[in-house]
Image 1: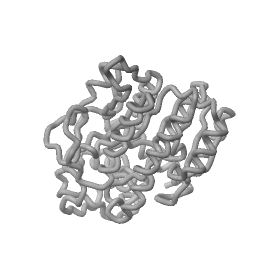
Image 2 (image 1 turned 90 degrees about the vertical axis):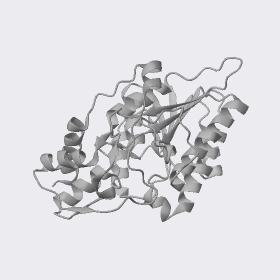
Image 3 (image 1 turned 120 degrees about the vertical axis):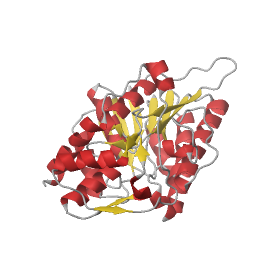
Image 4 (image 1 turned 180 degrees about the vertical axis):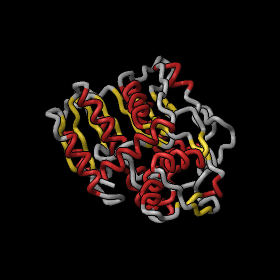
Length: 326
């Protein structure tokens, strides 16, 4: 089977592509290799993927209509799309909002248009985010909860993507699945995420910024568990009956809301260095707690995350030290 993975040089895209290749699928990977974070990290991920004969890389921007149309025209055998390319990060959306509209709104539309032009397409899986729950106070966050109150532009663009996918499923009968990821971490992770920032600063003996004065909780989800959930969904497209649209949404999380201070303590223990801590107020666009209700994913696919932060974080620290040789 030939599967198109957008954002293949990104954190989740790399891991998903790797597992697809390992199981024998052909992967056509696209990425624009932007400079949102260290390009060397993206290029190193790509180098590892290019070792597989089933992998083809095409440099392209998902918001570039002509580029994506050209890829579709030349790759008519694509049967699945895993659309993971996006402009990530809540705080950066305050600095460069136009990047989010281009990648997450226009890019989602361009990829959906591409999907409907592929004659063999069976499933369009795309990345959403736990950020869509916004100011929701009910825990854990459930797929049935309202997502009408985003507190960041990033969240608003991800909610928009869900609505566009539903519309295309309805109009063009494209089976779509949106995945609301909850704070993904692990080896080859993004340098703008908490685990990466904390390890880098603690090793450099620099203070780490801790928002909301440490009163933060997150459903931290290890990358291997994320990939397991993505592939389970990908392999089982939604089937519409006479009255339903073939569009669905799932939370993918660890189903544990962990204290940020516990998260930091595990990193300190693994590094054997006590962090210098700079306590700050809650940042604009941020929320104090996330917690995923994963019952739908458990019911439909037997999804069962296996990696608590006590195991996942030491793995990440060991990868970081090996990759950076520190």
